[in-house]
Image (tube, rainbow, N blue to C red):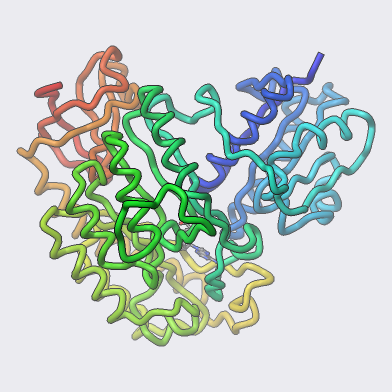
Amino acid sequence: MKPRVYIETFGCQMNVADTERAATGLRASGYDLCTSVDEADVVLLNTCSVREKAEQKVYTRIGELRAERPRAQDLVVGVMGCVAQLEGEAVFAQASSVNLVIGTRATDRISELIERARDGEKRVLDLGERGNNDSWDVSPVERHSPHVAFIPIIEGCNKFCSFCIVPYSRGRERSRPASEVVAEARRLQGLGYKEIHLIGQNVNSYRPRVQDGLEGFPGATPFCRLLRAVAATGLPRIKFTTSFPRDFHRDIVTAIEENTNLCDWVHLPVQSGSDRILKLMRRGHKRSDYLERIQRIKNSSRRLALTSDIIVGFPGETDEDFQQTVELVRECEYDSLYIFKYSKRSGTPAAEFHDNVPEAEKTARFLELEKVQRAAQKKIYSSYIGRKLSVLAEKQSSRSADDLSGHSTCHKVVNFRGDSALEGEIVEVMVTAAKTNSLYGTLVGR
Ligand code: SAM
């Protein structure tokens, strides 16, 4: 009998998508996937290394696993994803109970790697590249949701921002042919999916080697053409994340204006409002370039929700630099903002910079920026009260069994009283209350 595999996922949507892809491959090779550590013969942790805390979490979790299954001597424990790719052999040294280390491009070889570990090989390691015939297929049963699906369109990163580990953990950018992306969107549509997210570390840097699937779709960049090609499938909701500012062409907004199924939400991380820090971060854009793109988004004929990421306490960030970030956040009026304290990642250029911002100062800046964002967000969220939103009912709310939870086209979490029979439907909700990070409303139409 083939062993049962449990995959636990940490980190971003790319990791969620990799887990779905790995599970599809494993099941095709005859493995059973299970939903808890207790039932598993093999536990794989799909890991994130973007900040130090995320990486530490993995080792804590490995320790817990052995405690949860003290008598399972033959339990195979594997580390996959970004920590695996970066740490390689060192994972074995740090966590002696790990038998398998599976890099970010070895997803298609997991079943063979498991076989080797089950056959008694103590330390199985694969940090190799993808094979030419690697499959992007994801079976519907492995999708994280029956209503919302992620479609990776580009992997890796060529940007080499000085703080970021992603180019080292994920390799260079590789785009999938548009014909494959469109075919997957159509397949999902046929299966009843209402929403897809085109995903990638830098989704708008999409640059496939071949034009297949883009013929007849105009656009200033391959990504703009892809947006129009995917919109033409008629799939009800199409979102995309994450966009890189330097590659954010104004035609993206035009494509959104032309196609109502391209959703009214843009996630455009800025990281800092100071030109000096942006240069040290090697972002390849200035504050004014970013604000130009924001202006196009804000001037759109549709109101587009805008979200971003900021790093506070980057090495050398002065109070003046930080105040420029605060000012930029005020000016951009983000619908929501992910704020991170700078975390040193060894192997990145910034790890060599003198980190002169004390931890207490990083925390103080984090809290100050959070306060500014909260105030702006309160205003934006309150402005939705009395408005009708189109919401995809995704699941029962975790807060109340009588409520359903979903997202609006502008990617806000919306909760409302509703029966589980509505799950998977796009419904109309009248917003009655604004919470810190979500909206509450009443079902008014289907
Ligand atoms: N482009 C990727 C994406 O969004 O799909 C980036 C992923 S990363 C999870 C998201 C955010 O983490 C980045 O935009 C940045 O703000 C933050 N981040 C990356 N490296 C960091 C570091 N060394 N310290 C703190 N925050 C970091």
